[in-house]
Image 1: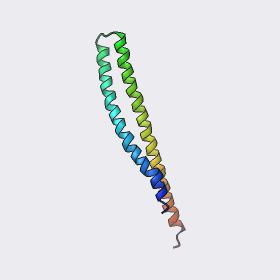
Image 2: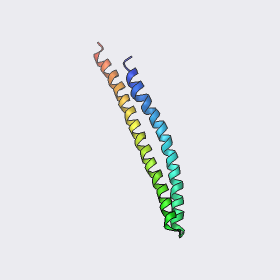
Image 3: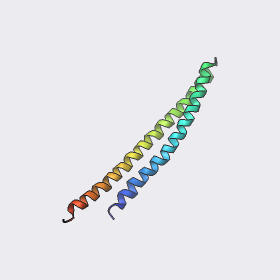
Image 4: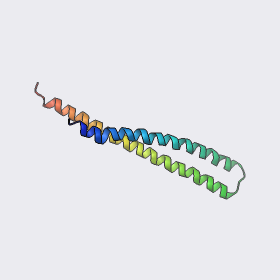
Length: 100
């Protein structure tokens, strides 16, 4: 019964966050690769500065999104690990208190 609170408040939301934010980080990674390829093509062609700045801005947008998704993925993993640690500490404390 004591394990329900850490499982419901830390482990399940943390694991769900890792899955959800990790998925979107991979989606943003793919979008960043496409934006970088487009930026590289604009750089190699002799385009005007307006096109170059627009391609660079698009690439930077995806970089920032990928960074944010990565941070949320890691924070969710930390939340899940804190919940797992609390469950393990509760079970270890219960085994120490039980009479032999």
